Image 1: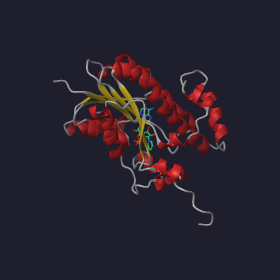
Image 2: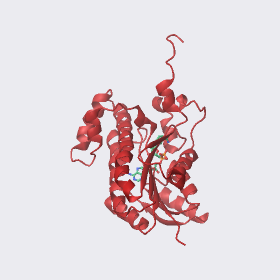
Image 3: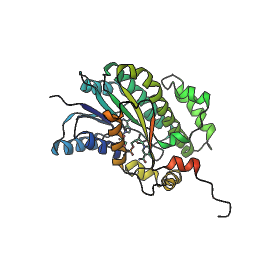
Length: 281
Ligand SMILES: NC(=O)c1ccc[n+]([C@@H]2O[C@H](COP(=O)([O-])OP(=O)(O)OC[C@H]3O[C@@H](n4cnc5c(N)ncnc54)[C@H](O)[C@@H]3O)[C@@H](O)[C@H]2O)c1
Protein backbone atom coordinates (compact mmCIF):
# COMPACT_ATOMS: atom_id res chain seq x y z
CA UNK A 1 0.00 0.00 0.00
CA UNK A 2 1.34 3.46 -0.90
CA UNK A 3 2.36 5.49 2.12
CA UNK A 4 1.86 9.18 2.64
CA UNK A 5 4.74 11.35 1.41
CA UNK A 6 6.49 14.12 3.33
CA UNK A 7 8.55 16.86 1.73
CA UNK A 8 11.21 18.29 4.00
CA UNK A 9 13.07 21.41 2.88
CA UNK A 10 16.32 22.32 4.58
CA UNK A 11 16.61 18.58 5.15
CA UNK A 12 20.36 18.68 5.80
CA UNK A 13 19.94 21.26 8.57
CA UNK A 14 19.28 20.79 12.26
CA UNK A 15 15.47 20.85 12.23
CA UNK A 16 15.27 19.22 8.80
CA UNK A 17 17.20 16.17 10.00
CA UNK A 18 15.05 15.79 13.11
CA UNK A 19 11.89 16.11 11.01
CA UNK A 20 13.13 13.59 8.44
CA UNK A 21 13.84 11.01 11.12
CA UNK A 22 10.45 11.52 12.80
CA UNK A 23 8.21 11.78 9.71
CA UNK A 24 10.21 9.05 7.96
CA UNK A 25 8.94 6.51 10.48
CA UNK A 26 5.49 6.64 8.90
CA UNK A 27 5.90 8.32 5.52
CA UNK A 28 8.12 8.26 2.44
CA UNK A 29 10.48 11.20 2.24
CA UNK A 30 11.22 13.83 -0.40
CA UNK A 31 14.20 15.90 0.70
CA UNK A 32 15.63 19.22 -0.50
CA UNK A 33 18.57 21.34 0.58
CA UNK A 34 21.03 23.70 -1.06
CA UNK A 35 23.93 22.02 0.79
CA UNK A 36 24.52 19.20 -1.70
CA UNK A 37 27.26 17.15 0.05
CA UNK A 38 25.45 17.23 3.43
CA UNK A 39 22.19 16.27 1.79
CA UNK A 40 23.82 13.38 -0.02
CA UNK A 41 25.48 12.07 3.17
CA UNK A 42 22.27 12.40 5.18
CA UNK A 43 20.22 10.63 2.50
CA UNK A 44 22.68 7.71 2.51
CA UNK A 45 22.48 7.60 6.30
CA UNK A 46 18.66 7.52 6.22
CA UNK A 47 18.53 4.83 3.56
CA UNK A 48 21.11 2.82 5.50
CA UNK A 49 18.78 3.00 8.51
CA UNK A 50 15.85 1.68 6.46
CA UNK A 51 13.99 4.91 5.70
CA UNK A 52 12.43 5.38 2.25
CA UNK A 53 13.74 8.47 0.49
CA UNK A 54 11.92 8.88 -2.83
CA UNK A 55 14.03 11.83 -3.92
CA UNK A 56 16.86 13.94 -2.53
CA UNK A 57 17.12 17.22 -4.43
CA UNK A 58 20.11 19.51 -4.05
CA UNK A 59 19.49 23.11 -5.04
CA UNK A 60 18.15 26.52 -4.16
CA UNK A 61 14.46 26.55 -3.27
CA UNK A 62 14.02 29.71 -5.30
CA UNK A 63 14.90 27.75 -8.44
CA UNK A 64 11.93 26.79 -10.63
CA UNK A 65 13.54 23.54 -11.83
CA UNK A 66 14.07 22.37 -8.24
CA UNK A 67 10.46 23.18 -7.34
CA UNK A 68 9.23 21.26 -10.39
CA UNK A 69 11.27 18.22 -9.33
CA UNK A 70 9.84 18.38 -5.80
CA UNK A 71 6.24 18.62 -6.94
CA UNK A 72 6.79 15.79 -9.43
CA UNK A 73 7.86 13.56 -6.53
CA UNK A 74 4.82 14.59 -4.45
CA UNK A 75 2.19 14.32 -7.18
CA UNK A 76 -0.36 11.55 -6.79
CA UNK A 77 -3.82 10.98 -5.40
CA UNK A 78 -2.96 11.13 -1.70
CA UNK A 79 -2.58 14.15 0.52
CA UNK A 80 1.00 14.81 1.57
CA UNK A 81 2.92 16.67 4.27
CA UNK A 82 5.32 19.56 3.80
CA UNK A 83 7.71 20.68 6.51
CA UNK A 84 9.49 23.76 5.23
CA UNK A 85 12.58 24.37 7.38
CA UNK A 86 14.98 25.87 4.80
CA UNK A 87 16.05 29.32 5.85
CA UNK A 88 18.86 31.77 6.60
CA UNK A 89 19.47 33.83 9.72
CA UNK A 90 21.54 36.96 10.46
CA UNK A 91 24.49 34.91 11.72
CA UNK A 92 24.60 33.15 8.33
CA UNK A 93 23.71 35.76 5.70
CA UNK A 94 22.95 39.39 4.90
CA UNK A 95 19.61 41.16 4.74
CA UNK A 96 18.91 40.54 1.05
CA UNK A 97 19.59 36.77 0.85
CA UNK A 98 17.63 36.35 4.08
CA UNK A 99 14.59 37.98 2.47
CA UNK A 100 15.13 36.03 -0.78
CA UNK A 101 15.24 32.64 0.95
CA UNK A 102 12.94 33.07 3.96
CA UNK A 103 10.15 34.88 2.15
CA UNK A 104 10.49 34.92 -1.64
CA UNK A 105 11.47 31.25 -1.95
CA UNK A 106 8.72 30.32 0.52
CA UNK A 107 6.09 32.00 -1.64
CA UNK A 108 7.49 30.26 -4.73
CA UNK A 109 7.34 26.92 -2.92
CA UNK A 110 3.68 27.44 -1.94
CA UNK A 111 2.81 28.59 -5.46
CA UNK A 112 4.43 25.43 -6.86
CA UNK A 113 2.50 23.23 -4.42
CA UNK A 114 -0.92 24.72 -5.07
CA UNK A 115 -1.68 22.87 -8.33
CA UNK A 116 -1.04 19.50 -6.64
CA UNK A 117 -2.79 20.11 -3.30
CA UNK A 118 -5.00 17.21 -2.25
CA UNK A 119 -7.51 16.72 0.55
CA UNK A 120 -5.44 15.80 3.58
CA UNK A 121 -2.39 17.84 2.61
CA UNK A 122 -0.79 19.56 5.60
CA UNK A 123 2.04 22.09 5.39
CA UNK A 124 4.06 23.49 8.28
CA UNK A 125 6.43 26.38 7.62
CA UNK A 126 9.10 27.12 10.19
CA UNK A 127 8.88 30.83 10.94
CA UNK A 128 10.44 32.35 14.07
CA UNK A 129 9.59 33.95 17.38
CA UNK A 130 11.41 36.97 15.94
CA UNK A 131 8.39 37.56 13.71
CA UNK A 132 6.30 38.19 16.83
CA UNK A 133 8.56 41.04 17.90
CA UNK A 134 7.87 43.20 14.84
CA UNK A 135 5.37 46.06 14.86
CA UNK A 136 2.39 45.67 12.54
CA UNK A 137 2.70 48.76 10.35
CA UNK A 138 0.05 48.66 7.61
CA UNK A 139 2.31 49.96 4.79
CA UNK A 140 5.03 47.43 5.69
CA UNK A 141 2.52 44.59 5.91
CA UNK A 142 1.22 45.52 2.45
CA UNK A 143 4.77 45.24 1.08
CA UNK A 144 5.43 41.93 2.84
CA UNK A 145 2.20 40.48 1.43
CA UNK A 146 3.45 40.97 -2.17
CA UNK A 147 7.08 39.76 -2.18
CA UNK A 148 7.07 38.75 -5.84
CA UNK A 149 6.54 42.37 -6.93
CA UNK A 150 9.41 43.59 -9.13
CA UNK A 151 10.48 46.37 -6.73
CA UNK A 152 9.92 44.40 -3.51
CA UNK A 153 13.58 43.97 -2.48
CA UNK A 154 14.31 47.68 -2.96
CA UNK A 155 11.18 48.77 -1.11
CA UNK A 156 11.71 46.43 1.82
CA UNK A 157 15.37 47.45 2.07
CA UNK A 158 14.22 51.03 2.61
CA UNK A 159 12.03 49.75 5.48
CA UNK A 160 14.70 47.78 7.36
CA UNK A 161 17.32 50.48 6.85
CA UNK A 162 14.93 52.99 8.43
CA UNK A 163 13.83 50.73 11.30
CA UNK A 164 17.33 49.95 12.56
CA UNK A 165 20.66 51.71 12.96
CA UNK A 166 21.63 51.09 9.32
CA UNK A 167 24.46 48.66 10.11
CA UNK A 168 24.68 45.37 8.21
CA UNK A 169 23.92 43.46 11.41
CA UNK A 170 20.86 45.54 12.17
CA UNK A 171 19.62 45.29 8.58
CA UNK A 172 20.01 41.49 8.59
CA UNK A 173 18.25 41.16 11.94
CA UNK A 174 15.28 43.29 10.92
CA UNK A 175 15.11 41.65 7.49
CA UNK A 176 14.97 38.25 9.27
CA UNK A 177 12.20 39.33 11.64
CA UNK A 178 10.18 40.91 8.83
CA UNK A 179 10.58 37.81 6.65
CA UNK A 180 9.22 35.64 9.45
CA UNK A 181 6.33 38.00 10.18
CA UNK A 182 5.49 37.69 6.48
CA UNK A 183 5.56 33.88 6.77
CA UNK A 184 3.06 34.06 9.66
CA UNK A 185 0.79 36.07 7.39
CA UNK A 186 1.28 33.64 4.50
CA UNK A 187 -0.18 30.83 6.59
CA UNK A 188 -3.19 33.00 7.40
CA UNK A 189 -3.87 34.08 3.82
CA UNK A 190 -3.20 30.71 2.15
CA UNK A 191 -5.43 28.93 4.68
CA UNK A 192 -8.40 30.70 3.10
CA UNK A 193 -7.88 29.04 -0.28
CA UNK A 194 -6.40 25.76 0.98
CA UNK A 195 -9.26 25.03 3.41
CA UNK A 196 -11.98 24.46 0.80
CA UNK A 197 -9.58 22.02 -0.90
CA UNK A 198 -9.18 20.01 2.31
CA UNK A 199 -5.62 21.21 2.88
CA UNK A 200 -4.16 22.91 5.94
CA UNK A 201 -1.24 25.28 6.44
CA UNK A 202 0.35 26.48 9.66
CA UNK A 203 3.58 27.93 11.00
CA UNK A 204 5.81 27.11 13.95
CA UNK A 205 7.75 29.88 15.64
CA UNK A 206 10.76 28.39 17.38
CA UNK A 207 12.62 30.19 20.10
CA UNK A 208 16.34 29.52 20.35
CA UNK A 209 16.95 25.94 19.21
CA UNK A 210 20.32 24.18 19.38
CA UNK A 211 20.94 23.48 15.68
CA UNK A 212 23.88 24.59 13.52
CA UNK A 213 22.03 27.88 12.92
CA UNK A 214 20.86 28.25 16.51
CA UNK A 215 24.36 27.73 17.93
CA UNK A 216 25.61 30.63 15.80
CA UNK A 217 22.67 32.85 16.77
CA UNK A 218 22.99 32.18 20.47
CA UNK A 219 26.49 33.64 20.29
CA UNK A 220 24.92 37.01 19.32
CA UNK A 221 23.30 39.44 21.81
CA UNK A 222 19.81 39.00 20.29
CA UNK A 223 20.03 35.21 20.26
CA UNK A 224 21.33 35.07 23.81
CA UNK A 225 18.50 37.34 24.99
CA UNK A 226 15.94 35.06 23.30
CA UNK A 227 17.44 31.97 24.97
CA UNK A 228 17.76 33.62 28.39
CA UNK A 229 14.16 34.85 28.26
CA UNK A 230 12.67 31.33 28.08
CA UNK A 231 10.97 30.63 31.42
CA UNK A 232 11.06 26.90 30.69
CA UNK A 233 14.74 27.03 31.65
CA UNK A 234 16.37 24.80 29.06
CA UNK A 235 17.52 25.28 25.48
CA UNK A 236 15.21 24.08 22.75
CA UNK A 237 16.31 21.11 20.64
CA UNK A 238 15.43 20.14 17.08
CA UNK A 239 13.18 17.31 18.31
CA UNK A 240 10.94 19.90 20.04
CA UNK A 241 10.22 21.37 16.61
CA UNK A 242 9.90 18.01 14.84
CA UNK A 243 7.33 16.78 17.37
CA UNK A 244 5.28 19.97 17.06
CA UNK A 245 5.37 19.74 13.24
CA UNK A 246 4.34 16.08 13.46
CA UNK A 247 1.33 17.02 15.58
CA UNK A 248 0.34 19.84 13.19
CA UNK A 249 0.43 17.44 10.23
CA UNK A 250 -1.57 14.75 12.06
CA UNK A 251 -5.31 14.09 12.12
CA UNK A 252 -5.28 15.32 15.73
CA UNK A 253 -4.74 18.80 14.27
CA UNK A 254 -7.43 18.53 11.59
CA UNK A 255 -9.21 21.72 12.80
CA UNK A 256 -5.99 23.73 12.99
CA UNK A 257 -5.03 25.93 10.06
CA UNK A 258 -4.00 29.50 9.30
CA UNK A 259 -2.21 30.02 12.60
CA UNK A 260 1.16 29.97 14.32
CA UNK A 261 2.35 27.72 17.14
CA UNK A 262 5.12 29.16 19.29
CA UNK A 263 7.60 26.48 20.35
CA UNK A 264 9.87 28.83 22.24
CA UNK A 265 9.94 27.76 25.88
CA UNK A 266 7.77 30.80 26.62
CA UNK A 267 10.28 33.40 25.36
CA UNK A 268 7.74 35.63 23.65
CA UNK A 269 5.38 35.44 26.62
CA UNK A 270 8.28 36.54 28.81
CA UNK A 271 9.26 39.40 26.48
CA UNK A 272 5.67 40.65 26.58
CA UNK A 273 4.77 40.16 30.23
CA UNK A 274 7.86 39.93 32.41
CA UNK A 275 8.22 43.16 34.33
CA UNK A 276 11.33 45.18 33.51
CA UNK A 277 13.81 45.06 36.40
CA UNK A 278 13.69 48.11 38.64
CA UNK A 279 16.46 50.55 37.77
CA UNK A 280 19.60 49.84 39.78
CA UNK A 281 18.52 46.20 40.37
N1 LIG B 1 17.70 27.36 15.24
C1 LIG B 1 17.01 28.36 15.77
O1 LIG B 1 17.30 28.79 16.90
C2 LIG B 1 15.84 28.95 15.03
C3 LIG B 1 15.01 29.84 15.71
C4 LIG B 1 13.90 30.37 15.07
C5 LIG B 1 13.64 30.02 13.76
N2 LIG B 1 14.47 29.15 13.10
C6 LIG B 1 14.13 28.79 11.73
O2 LIG B 1 14.06 27.39 11.62
C7 LIG B 1 14.39 26.97 10.30
C8 LIG B 1 15.41 25.85 10.36
O3 LIG B 1 16.57 26.32 11.01
P1 LIG B 1 17.73 25.36 11.56
O4 LIG B 1 18.01 25.84 12.91
O5 LIG B 1 17.41 23.94 11.30
O6 LIG B 1 18.92 25.89 10.62
P2 LIG B 1 20.06 25.10 9.85
O7 LIG B 1 20.98 26.15 9.34
O8 LIG B 1 20.59 24.02 10.69
O9 LIG B 1 19.26 24.45 8.62
C9 LIG B 1 18.71 25.22 7.58
C10 LIG B 1 18.93 24.47 6.29
O10 LIG B 1 18.34 25.22 5.23
C11 LIG B 1 19.18 25.08 4.10
N3 LIG B 1 18.96 26.18 3.17
C12 LIG B 1 19.33 27.48 3.33
N4 LIG B 1 19.02 28.18 2.24
C13 LIG B 1 18.43 27.33 1.36
C14 LIG B 1 17.90 27.47 0.05
N5 LIG B 1 17.92 28.64 -0.59
N6 LIG B 1 17.36 26.38 -0.55
C15 LIG B 1 17.37 25.19 0.08
N7 LIG B 1 17.86 24.99 1.32
C16 LIG B 1 18.40 26.05 1.96
C17 LIG B 1 20.60 25.07 4.66
O11 LIG B 1 21.54 24.49 3.77
C18 LIG B 1 20.41 24.27 5.95
O12 LIG B 1 20.70 22.90 5.76
C19 LIG B 1 14.88 28.23 9.58
O13 LIG B 1 13.85 28.72 8.76
C20 LIG B 1 15.16 29.21 10.71
O14 LIG B 1 15.01 30.55 10.34
C21 LIG B 1 15.57 28.61 13.71
